[in-house]
Length: 268
Image 1 (cartoon, rainbow, N blue to C red):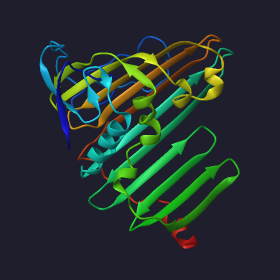
Image 2 (cartoon, rainbow, N blue to C red; image 1 turned 90 degrees about the vertical axis):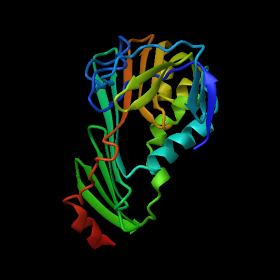
Image 3 (cartoon, rainbow, N blue to C red; image 1 turned 90 degrees about the horizontal axis):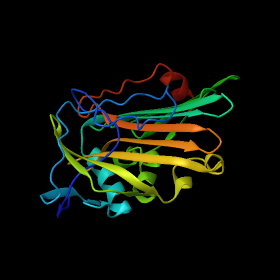
């Protein structure tokens, strides 16, 4: 992987590293029910900006220098690991007291070329299992369950959680990062200075309420993948939204064939 040596440091966002503590806080606002994010156990000591650091491709002392390169570095790095897990959670608390949630879970085993995706929004649950270049699907709704199976070549770089993480590269201006040494290697913590395109990250109806506060954090591992990310939004109408992405279980994740596999296989 190509890297550039530059001065300064850091990355942002809450994410889980082995042996947890907390590298990044919740930023104050946001739904209190959002999934908490563990942080590295190592002491997060800021490194002087005059030091030269070897940033992953797409990053530098002034934030994300190339959004496309950062996205490719993230996906490519994960594709090179034997296994890993990605979690993404969004909690929305409206000013009228209502609350909604969305969760995404992805487990990937590159060695066996298997993966399991689960999406839940409180009403519908969508599950997709990949094995032997086949995709097996299960959709559960209040009216029942549906199953399906189709050909789908296993594509490692497609399993990086890009739909949730990639918008944070190009729609946000970040400040000077902080370099942190952990038991799992060096991470760079970035905090947002300005969100330039909020609609790329959150639904338009949230943006239409008027943004009072929009904070984003990224925690980037020295290998180039995003270990964690968090964004918190507060609107003028009182809606609070918090999204959290975490990459963990690197090298330790196992993908089990789901119980509904046979039902789906029968359809194909």
